[in-house]
Length: 216
Image (tube, rainbow, N blue to C red):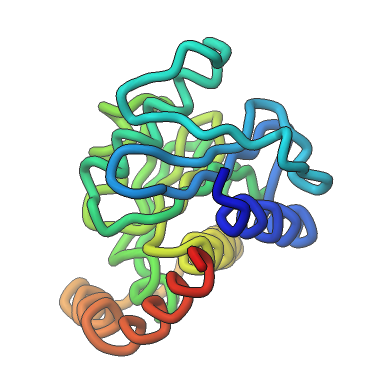
């Protein structure tokens, strides 16, 4: 067992809980190498997570897991394979993100940091399956999932956690803006330019340092 990765998962699971970002079935995973991950068990209490609540599984399957865990593992595996630079994934249930997810909306670029860290918009997957999730999260660091909350991803746990925070803030802004007559969104080109600059320049050195910190 990689004690450093396990400790990092426990640390960020507690952060998610402290920020009230998880419901009954939050999940956190970190990629190990190119074909395995550490992932929290289904139903684990993220606020009081222990080493026993985290399992190491291969991308090629594991027999020692429940059916619900197999389904979640399949989604995480699919994201890791489709987005090779992704190193961590979080499945959470923040209040405002859940409201938007259950309505099946696409959140436009209502915040600068949303465009930079998450993507030019946030789409809703119709179910928590690889087919729907990969389509919704393509080119982004997060997506909503109808009736299941949201998924955030990143090169590191820190980036996935930040994407979760930012999406929840964007969802809150979108909801409140809609109530009073609508949000003023960033232009499509501006939103994508901010995303490009963030990924290629401002975040690169920081995430490299975070990755080294989480894995060593």
